[in-house]
Amino acid sequence: MSLEYSKAKNESLTCTYNKIFLHSSYNPQTESRRFAESIKLDFIPQNIIVIEPALSYCKKDLCELFPASRICAIRFIKDIKAEDKFEKEFIYQTISQLKTDLFNYFGEEGLLNSFFITWPPAAKCFSEEDKQIWGLIKDLLKECQSILATRQFFSKRWIKNEFNFLSNISKCTKLKKINLPVFITASGPSLKNCIKFLKENQKRFFILACSSSIKALLKNEIFPDLCISTDGGFWAKKHLYELSKHPELNLAITAESNIDKKLFKSNVIVPLAYCDNFDDSIFNSTGIPFNKARRNGTISGTALELALSITDKEIYFTGLDLEANKGFVHTEPNELEIENSLKDNKLKPTDTRLFGQSLESTQLEIYRNWFVSNSEKFNRVFRVSHDYKFKHTLGQIKDIDFKSIKIDESKDCGKQKDSLGTSFFKNSFDFFENEKSISISKKDISGIFEKLFKDEYWLKSYFPADVIAINRTCDNTKKEELKNKLNEKINELRSFIGRRIN
Image (cartoon, rainbow, N blue to C red; front, side, top):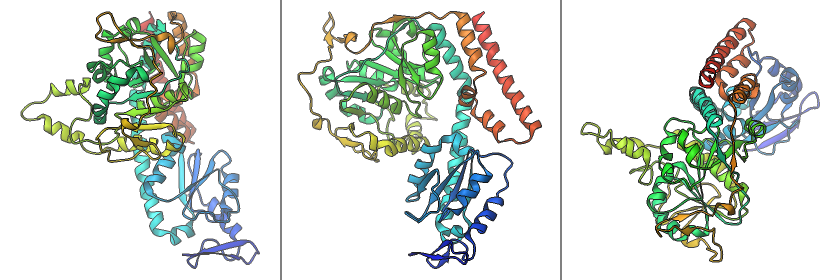
């Protein structure tokens, strides 16, 4: 296969690929202009993505006709002599990699606000690749619609969680920088194989426990230095039931997290503010101390980036399987597994339930691909297993046995036996700032939400489907109808908050 350059009749550069012209042999600029003008849209796309635009003559025309849109490209040909550089170019290597790259760059909202089009000569020259790309686009947009529908479905729940957070926050603190390696525990089956090692060496690490792993750790007398829960779903707080028995354990949460009210009284909270959101301004205005965090589809991703921000040492993951498993999907005991097992019976036995859990899911693939695509910047992150074979690697994140971990015997994070000699307690002074008492008045909470209801970024985050529909509609009458529907939803939430405050 060969790429050849030549001069068109108007002296502009043109080219062929496998003897097929990718541009006009007479006037590539006129050809490009006609292509751009042929695009008729009833909305203004946030992104226009051209599939293999060859020498990129169309970039200039698209920028002129769609000045509010980002003009990007998917390339089949690497290092082509392009007339102009697109804002972002994606090199097609494999379908799975391209899917990950597109999703990570644009996100679900950006992709649903995009317009895809193939440069016509490229469709002929790369017919098979073009067909695969359009199949990918179809699947990707379906997944984005599903993600957006989930976000929209849970938006009311998240807002109620924020109200719960602001109404009940009382004891809180902030994480300091620490001089220890961090061990993050997720709840995948591989966690079981590291329990003995963690129990024996917990004084040598800062242990950050994702919520679903808490019960398994405490059952084995492993006492995390910090627990973390970022999920706003109604099932999420079930993983935190065990914490009410351990008021000495601190809990990191976002305002969206779903937790039981009594935990605000029993345990010290480490508030997390999403750095791409409005949380930090709210927390600052109310005097709530916080650590910055990044929103992620999985709690493990948020926990990892939090760990990277608090230590310059190595970070070890265990239980980060991110793959289907023939047996239990969590290391036992697990609150959800306990609850689900109560529904098992002769007609729907445990094996039937476990078989359903053993099937690979799109959600797991998305989570796994996030770690893979970001693994280059995680050069001090390791996934730990012992006699456990993972089906998938996580890019450049190395899989190691705990025997490969160099333990500094001089390091001791301050954990000591309690008076009964049966468990550890924390010397929290080493890791956390002094505890702070917070009390936010009902009037202030009402004012916070009234301000949020008028904030465009907040509306986009919590009512993404509504905002996208409004932005994509050019018909003014239809646009007003959609805005009125959104206002009805906001007024419903305004009434909810009003009833709770009064």
